[in-house]
Image (cartoon, rainbow, N blue to C red):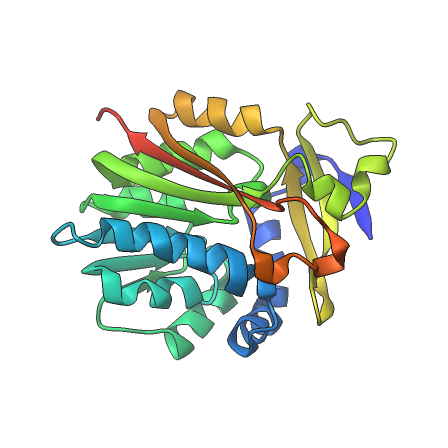
Length: 252
Protein backbone atom coordinates (compact mmCIF):
# COMPACT_ATOMS: atom_id res chain seq x y z
CA UNK A 1 0.00 0.00 0.00
CA UNK A 2 1.28 3.47 -0.92
CA UNK A 3 0.29 6.55 1.03
CA UNK A 4 1.24 10.07 0.03
CA UNK A 5 2.76 12.09 2.87
CA UNK A 6 4.05 15.64 3.38
CA UNK A 7 7.81 15.72 2.85
CA UNK A 8 8.42 18.49 5.39
CA UNK A 9 7.12 16.22 8.16
CA UNK A 10 9.74 13.56 7.49
CA UNK A 11 12.72 13.82 9.82
CA UNK A 12 16.02 11.97 9.42
CA UNK A 13 15.34 10.11 12.67
CA UNK A 14 12.00 8.90 11.28
CA UNK A 15 13.68 7.53 8.15
CA UNK A 16 16.44 5.92 10.24
CA UNK A 17 13.78 4.13 12.34
CA UNK A 18 12.09 2.82 9.20
CA UNK A 19 15.36 1.28 7.98
CA UNK A 20 16.09 -0.12 11.43
CA UNK A 21 12.79 -1.99 11.26
CA UNK A 22 13.56 -3.69 7.92
CA UNK A 23 17.35 -4.09 8.33
CA UNK A 24 17.49 -7.75 9.42
CA UNK A 25 15.00 -9.06 6.84
CA UNK A 26 16.69 -6.97 4.16
CA UNK A 27 20.08 -8.44 5.08
CA UNK A 28 18.71 -12.00 4.96
CA UNK A 29 17.10 -11.36 1.57
CA UNK A 30 20.41 -10.18 0.13
CA UNK A 31 22.44 -13.01 1.70
CA UNK A 32 20.03 -15.67 0.41
CA UNK A 33 19.96 -14.21 -3.12
CA UNK A 34 16.24 -13.52 -2.86
CA UNK A 35 16.72 -9.83 -3.67
CA UNK A 36 17.14 -10.27 -7.41
CA UNK A 37 17.26 -6.55 -8.13
CA UNK A 38 20.35 -6.23 -5.95
CA UNK A 39 21.99 -9.45 -7.18
CA UNK A 40 21.26 -9.11 -10.90
CA UNK A 41 21.20 -5.36 -11.54
CA UNK A 42 22.55 -3.04 -8.85
CA UNK A 43 25.51 -5.02 -7.50
CA UNK A 44 26.91 -5.99 -10.95
CA UNK A 45 26.64 -2.39 -12.16
CA UNK A 46 28.51 -0.89 -9.21
CA UNK A 47 31.14 -3.67 -9.28
CA UNK A 48 31.72 -3.04 -12.99
CA UNK A 49 32.32 0.65 -12.36
CA UNK A 50 34.56 0.09 -9.32
CA UNK A 51 36.70 -2.40 -11.26
CA UNK A 52 37.23 0.33 -13.84
CA UNK A 53 38.64 2.62 -11.16
CA UNK A 54 40.63 -0.11 -9.37
CA UNK A 55 43.78 0.52 -11.44
CA UNK A 56 44.05 3.81 -9.56
CA UNK A 57 46.55 3.54 -6.71
CA UNK A 58 45.39 3.97 -3.11
CA UNK A 59 41.72 3.99 -4.12
CA UNK A 60 39.50 5.42 -1.38
CA UNK A 61 35.72 4.87 -1.42
CA UNK A 62 32.82 6.05 0.75
CA UNK A 63 29.67 3.93 0.56
CA UNK A 64 26.92 6.30 1.69
CA UNK A 65 23.78 4.52 2.84
CA UNK A 66 25.68 1.23 2.99
CA UNK A 67 22.94 -0.66 4.84
CA UNK A 68 24.21 -4.02 6.10
CA UNK A 69 27.44 -3.62 4.11
CA UNK A 70 26.93 -6.22 1.38
CA UNK A 71 27.94 -3.86 -1.43
CA UNK A 72 30.68 -2.37 0.76
CA UNK A 73 32.20 -5.80 1.33
CA UNK A 74 31.80 -6.81 -2.34
CA UNK A 75 33.97 -3.90 -3.53
CA UNK A 76 36.51 -4.57 -0.77
CA UNK A 77 38.96 -6.44 -3.03
CA UNK A 78 39.14 -3.56 -5.52
CA UNK A 79 39.78 -0.74 -3.04
CA UNK A 80 42.48 0.26 -0.58
CA UNK A 81 40.32 2.17 1.91
CA UNK A 82 36.54 1.96 2.35
CA UNK A 83 34.14 3.79 4.65
CA UNK A 84 30.55 2.59 5.02
CA UNK A 85 28.07 4.99 6.60
CA UNK A 86 24.37 4.66 7.34
CA UNK A 87 21.82 6.40 9.54
CA UNK A 88 20.35 3.02 10.53
CA UNK A 89 22.03 1.78 13.69
CA UNK A 90 20.75 -1.78 13.18
CA UNK A 91 22.11 -1.86 9.63
CA UNK A 92 25.57 -0.80 10.78
CA UNK A 93 25.53 -3.44 13.52
CA UNK A 94 24.73 -6.08 10.88
CA UNK A 95 27.46 -4.72 8.60
CA UNK A 96 30.05 -4.97 11.36
CA UNK A 97 28.93 -8.51 12.20
CA UNK A 98 28.63 -10.01 8.72
CA UNK A 99 30.58 -7.79 6.30
CA UNK A 100 33.66 -6.56 8.11
CA UNK A 101 37.22 -6.30 6.79
CA UNK A 102 40.46 -4.60 7.88
CA UNK A 103 40.00 -2.22 4.95
CA UNK A 104 36.51 -1.13 6.00
CA UNK A 105 35.42 1.34 8.66
CA UNK A 106 31.70 1.63 9.44
CA UNK A 107 29.99 4.67 10.95
CA UNK A 108 26.41 5.08 12.17
CA UNK A 109 26.16 8.62 10.81
CA UNK A 110 24.58 10.65 8.06
CA UNK A 111 26.77 11.82 5.19
CA UNK A 112 26.38 15.36 6.54
CA UNK A 113 27.76 14.31 9.94
CA UNK A 114 30.56 12.31 8.34
CA UNK A 115 31.58 15.22 6.08
CA UNK A 116 32.06 17.38 9.18
CA UNK A 117 34.49 14.97 10.88
CA UNK A 118 36.37 13.46 7.94
CA UNK A 119 39.66 15.04 6.91
CA UNK A 120 40.63 12.47 4.29
CA UNK A 121 39.18 13.03 0.82
CA UNK A 122 37.75 10.07 -1.12
CA UNK A 123 38.12 9.19 -4.79
CA UNK A 124 34.60 7.75 -5.06
CA UNK A 125 31.34 8.07 -3.18
CA UNK A 126 28.59 5.51 -3.82
CA UNK A 127 24.92 6.42 -3.42
CA UNK A 128 23.19 3.12 -4.16
CA UNK A 129 19.41 3.59 -3.92
CA UNK A 130 19.85 6.45 -1.46
CA UNK A 131 18.65 9.68 -3.10
CA UNK A 132 15.12 8.33 -3.62
CA UNK A 133 14.84 7.96 0.17
CA UNK A 134 15.91 11.46 1.23
CA UNK A 135 13.85 14.63 1.36
CA UNK A 136 16.65 17.09 0.48
CA UNK A 137 18.94 15.86 -2.32
CA UNK A 138 21.05 19.02 -2.45
CA UNK A 139 21.90 18.74 1.24
CA UNK A 140 23.14 15.19 0.66
CA UNK A 141 25.03 16.04 -2.54
CA UNK A 142 26.70 19.07 -0.93
CA UNK A 143 28.01 16.75 1.81
CA UNK A 144 29.18 14.23 -0.80
CA UNK A 145 31.03 17.05 -2.54
CA UNK A 146 32.84 17.86 0.72
CA UNK A 147 34.13 14.30 1.20
CA UNK A 148 35.42 13.92 -2.39
CA UNK A 149 38.70 15.01 -3.92
CA UNK A 150 38.54 17.37 -6.89
CA UNK A 151 38.05 15.01 -9.84
CA UNK A 152 36.42 12.43 -7.57
CA UNK A 153 33.29 10.64 -8.74
CA UNK A 154 29.87 9.99 -7.25
CA UNK A 155 28.19 6.78 -8.46
CA UNK A 156 24.41 6.91 -8.11
CA UNK A 157 21.63 4.39 -8.61
CA UNK A 158 17.96 5.34 -8.27
CA UNK A 159 14.61 3.81 -9.19
CA UNK A 160 13.78 4.90 -12.75
CA UNK A 161 11.46 7.91 -12.26
CA UNK A 162 9.71 7.22 -15.57
CA UNK A 163 8.98 3.53 -15.04
CA UNK A 164 9.03 2.95 -11.27
CA UNK A 165 5.57 4.55 -10.85
CA UNK A 166 4.25 2.12 -13.48
CA UNK A 167 5.97 -0.84 -11.83
CA UNK A 168 4.26 -0.10 -8.50
CA UNK A 169 1.06 1.24 -10.11
CA UNK A 170 0.97 4.56 -8.32
CA UNK A 171 1.10 6.42 -11.64
CA UNK A 172 -2.67 5.89 -11.68
CA UNK A 173 -3.22 7.69 -8.36
CA UNK A 174 -4.94 11.08 -8.55
CA UNK A 175 -2.15 12.74 -6.56
CA UNK A 176 0.64 11.56 -8.87
CA UNK A 177 2.24 14.06 -11.26
CA UNK A 178 5.51 13.07 -12.91
CA UNK A 179 7.03 16.58 -12.82
CA UNK A 180 6.45 17.06 -9.08
CA UNK A 181 8.51 15.84 -6.13
CA UNK A 182 6.22 13.60 -4.10
CA UNK A 183 7.02 12.03 -0.74
CA UNK A 184 5.21 8.79 0.09
CA UNK A 185 5.15 5.89 2.51
CA UNK A 186 5.27 2.58 0.69
CA UNK A 187 5.55 -1.12 1.43
CA UNK A 188 9.16 -2.28 1.12
CA UNK A 189 8.65 -5.37 -0.98
CA UNK A 190 11.20 -7.91 -2.24
CA UNK A 191 10.29 -10.14 -5.16
CA UNK A 192 9.94 -13.72 -3.96
CA UNK A 193 9.50 -12.68 -0.34
CA UNK A 194 6.87 -9.96 -0.27
CA UNK A 195 6.47 -7.05 2.13
CA UNK A 196 9.13 -6.73 4.85
CA UNK A 197 8.19 -3.30 6.17
CA UNK A 198 7.29 0.28 5.32
CA UNK A 199 9.74 2.98 4.16
CA UNK A 200 9.81 6.48 2.72
CA UNK A 201 10.15 6.93 -1.04
CA UNK A 202 10.54 10.23 -2.88
CA UNK A 203 9.48 10.49 -6.50
CA UNK A 204 11.50 13.04 -8.49
CA UNK A 205 11.67 13.60 -12.25
CA UNK A 206 15.06 12.79 -13.74
CA UNK A 207 15.78 16.44 -14.50
CA UNK A 208 15.67 17.25 -10.77
CA UNK A 209 18.49 14.81 -10.04
CA UNK A 210 20.58 16.26 -12.87
CA UNK A 211 19.95 19.87 -11.83
CA UNK A 212 20.69 19.13 -8.17
CA UNK A 213 24.01 17.49 -9.07
CA UNK A 214 24.98 20.58 -11.08
CA UNK A 215 23.94 22.89 -8.21
CA UNK A 216 26.17 20.87 -5.86
CA UNK A 217 29.26 21.30 -8.05
CA UNK A 218 29.21 18.14 -10.18
CA UNK A 219 29.51 17.51 -13.90
CA UNK A 220 27.59 14.55 -15.35
CA UNK A 221 29.97 11.94 -16.82
CA UNK A 222 27.68 8.93 -17.24
CA UNK A 223 24.03 7.96 -17.52
CA UNK A 224 22.53 4.50 -18.06
CA UNK A 225 19.10 2.88 -17.82
CA UNK A 226 19.74 -0.39 -16.02
CA UNK A 227 18.27 -3.61 -17.28
CA UNK A 228 19.10 -7.26 -16.76
CA UNK A 229 17.97 -10.25 -18.79
CA UNK A 230 17.96 -12.25 -15.54
CA UNK A 231 15.29 -9.97 -14.11
CA UNK A 232 13.38 -9.46 -17.33
CA UNK A 233 10.48 -11.64 -16.26
CA UNK A 234 9.95 -9.94 -12.90
CA UNK A 235 6.22 -9.16 -12.77
CA UNK A 236 6.29 -9.29 -16.61
CA UNK A 237 7.71 -5.76 -16.59
CA UNK A 238 9.48 -4.88 -19.83
CA UNK A 239 11.12 -1.57 -18.97
CA UNK A 240 14.30 -0.59 -17.07
CA UNK A 241 13.49 -0.10 -13.39
CA UNK A 242 16.72 1.64 -12.37
CA UNK A 243 18.99 4.45 -13.52
CA UNK A 244 22.75 4.84 -13.06
CA UNK A 245 24.22 8.35 -12.93
CA UNK A 246 27.92 9.14 -12.62
CA UNK A 247 29.22 12.63 -11.91
CA UNK A 248 32.58 14.29 -11.27
CA UNK A 249 33.45 16.90 -8.66
CA UNK A 250 34.79 19.72 -10.79
CA UNK A 251 36.16 22.20 -8.24
CA UNK A 252 36.97 22.60 -4.54
